[in-house]
Length: 323
Image (tube, rainbow, N blue to C red; front, side, top):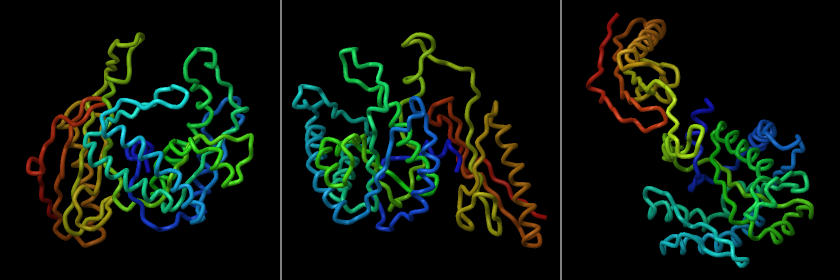
């Protein structure tokens, strides 16, 4: 899997199958996650993979009321809730369909202890070097030596077809969790990651703020406008007898995809035609020159960092080839 695809489709999964995640999959994920950047190469992070049903069940019992408190505030339209020490904790959401997302998360929380693996991410905070402790605000710098490895783990699992859900709610029950799992006193819990095979397909596109809302040039608020070509994504569909690279099942639509940084649509179509020729050659070699039909399923033209703003339907680009 390309890194771009993994990053664009690594979502907070809410529905998991009951299938266990094999040891070798988890081991491979840690093998690559450990190369995350961390201060002084001190490697402060440790992972505890919780699969025992009784232990997961107890974690689930602790997790549900924590979620219900946040969910109640969010549904009431509250911007934040206050901690015992007076700190404000945001409950604002940015979902397009909040009612559906909240309902999905409700069932996720009710089944928290039933998901295949709960990964407790621990950190030795004595091995971090927080530089913001005297700024009179919430310290966040120490997390720079912790969370990159946790995110690397999620991406490494996504690469193997395993979905994840990254949550910090259960950290509020750290003393109980540490006692339950025998976590040494010098370690703190930084987050929990649910992992398992998704019961529903991975999303094809996640919705996030546009690049222009996130990046600035030289000074905050100054628009960042790099001189980039539009992105044109071409979905090549195939007809009978064709098995182009990337096809998931015979006869499917959108079986092959070219990501092209090109100046215009005509060039993109030219790339597709090159793919057609390759598909035809493969078909002739494998099937003795049977009639082959090809169709461009869609062409999306997007501004850099934006959602597609031009969509050309299949009927616009259709071609039949015979030997």
